[in-house]
Length: 331
Image 1 (cartoon, helix red, strand yellow):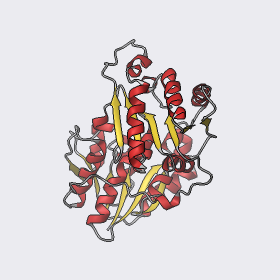
Image 2 (cartoon, one colour):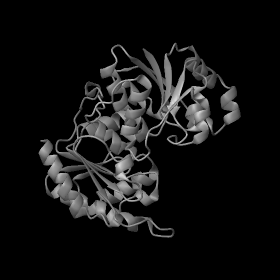
Image 3 (cartoon, helix red, strand yellow):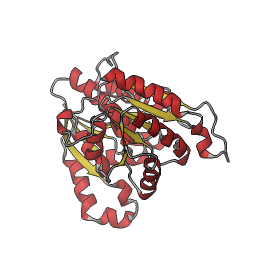
Image 4 (spheres, helix red, strand yellow):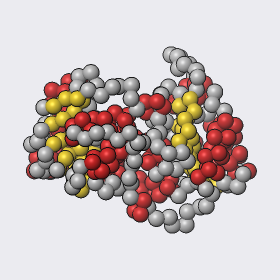
């Protein structure tokens, strides 16, 4: 059986889809998957053993020049890749207009969420077959449920497994006893105060850990510099690609992060991980897997409220207590 999965973005959403493929591969002998995904995340599906081919999509980039992009050779090649595949099914695991639009180019039965389960209701017009999945479930479990209904197997009762091939990530001079602090996120209201990061850094380094600070843009780089200014055992990493970030996470003793896609990637590697939440709910979109701790602010995010006030309630002391516990347990 040959299935095309459409899950284009974002980083966390792509990672959330992996356990469903693991379930299907265990339940259906010889099943093969191709995967249409945003070019920035195209490496991730290739790390799963059940994925045969990755089709990079560049909707984010094409939106900047929609007319030129749709008339250009790049989109034509992408459309050909979608059309020429001999698929038994195409699963839109995203449920958005953009993913449903891509599904329509595939010459195969199209499957997706029903109107009460999908994220954007108009997307259901693209599907030949629709399935009900409760919205109150965690994102990983929703996708696992969707796949089990479409592919007609009993959903395993055990926790989902990402099954990433860790042999693809070899350490090269990686610091031992390192902790990665994922301080960056796309929304200001998800940020943890810099003063808290500095305090946590002092706690970590005084206990013999090296602190690694990745960054993805100039704002995050400047924040990393300020956090690292507290002592010499905090290191600002060079700008890394996705594989470099994955290798860094895999070889870390533990991770602390706000609600960001890299936290989900750390979870996929079973790295001890403390994730901090304010305006979002870990029961729905929290990191999923082994050795995961979720800490959430009890304050309600109100209009006009200082974004950092929401997250400041989570103290560095409680973060360190949880991180040191799971990091020691994992040794």
